[in-house]
Image (tube, rainbow, N blue to C red; front, top):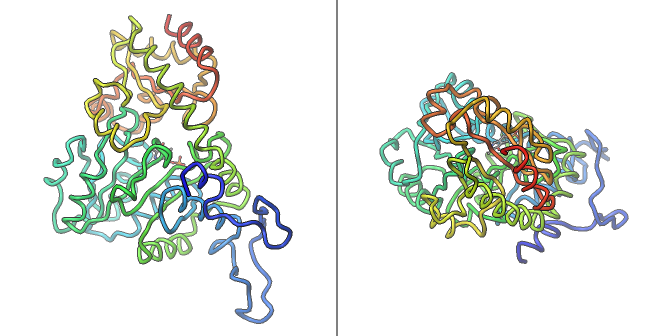
Amino acid sequence: MKFNTKTIHGGQEHDKAYGSVMPPIYQTSTYAQSTPGGHKGYEYSRTHNPTRNALENAFASIENGNYGLAFGSGLAAMDAVIKLLKPGDEVVSTNDLYGGSYRLFTKIYADFGIKFHFVGMQNAANIENYINKNTKLIWVETPTNPMMNIIDIKAISKIAKAHNVLLAVDNTFATPYLQLPLDLGADIVMHSATKYLGGHSDVVMGALIVKDKDLADRLYFIQNASGAICGPQDSFLVLRGIKTLHIRMQRHCENGKVVAEYLVNHPKIENVYWPGFKSHPNHNIAKTQMKDFGGMISFTTKGNNYEEAIKIVERLKIFTLAESLGGVESLCGHPASMTHASIPKNEREKIGVVDSLIRLSVGIEDKDDLIADLKQAIG
Ligand SMILES: *Cc1c(COP(=O)(O)O)cnc(C)c1O
């Protein structure tokens, strides 16, 4: 099955009771047993729920994995991955990272005795310096948030395998429409399904996808034992979102290109970060590992003025000023004061999150309206 068919049919079967084409929302916590242990595969909805299972099968299918797991948020999914580790273990992580991921690592798990190294991974060989006998996990986000750096997943996976270390990739920004980390050698794919997979800014959810059965069993154990699952209604919504992922992504990419090109030619704009530009430092890796370049774009204004950046995001009308990304509607954000406010100023500036940086999640509206909105806001 090809990707554009998998989004609609992958891992799905029609409902056995009445043939409903979409799985029913099994809004139940428990399941009747005829005799102790005499059940139809479902005992309690923290462990399994048929609507959630339908979604988890869809996750596995679209990422070319064998097993999918759904969680109550992207961070809950990450939390389950870190729970594979023990005190004394070390993690090598991308340095330009979703702010909440950084917070989870440094403010929660550092206190549990897990050591994190935040490393620029644009040059994959760089991570070798941070790997030792305690290293158990490499955490990669690509494209990175919000600097849109590109990390070579295949090159990192070769290093991970040579050292017998797990490789997890946060595929939230790219989605499986653009890149398939498991095919490139990753062991775990993670998503904030809140973003492109759900696609309509109406649900918070996380996902993990793996190929290996033992790894899947350990993660299913954590999912059930820690209990950070999502409900059946949310599972239904994300399953519905996935069915249009491919056509939404196609339009996000088309509009993203138009917006990036408008910005790069604008006299008041200093830098535009978008992997589709030939001048992007890792454009060639992006071209190899991604199908297209997506609708996430960051830019800075000349003079790097904090107040001016705030004015621009306030003036934008179709681009709603809001946290999050990946929905049908265009959003804008000011990382220094919003998503990355929890990263100390000197740390965030080291990775390029300066005062005038604005991040756009380009939606699927008409491109002419998006350009007109940017024009009136930037001036
Ligand atoms: C939003 C996001 C997360 C966190 O996901 P939640 O669903 O908000 O918990 C993690 N990584 C990336 C890249 C994100 O954009």
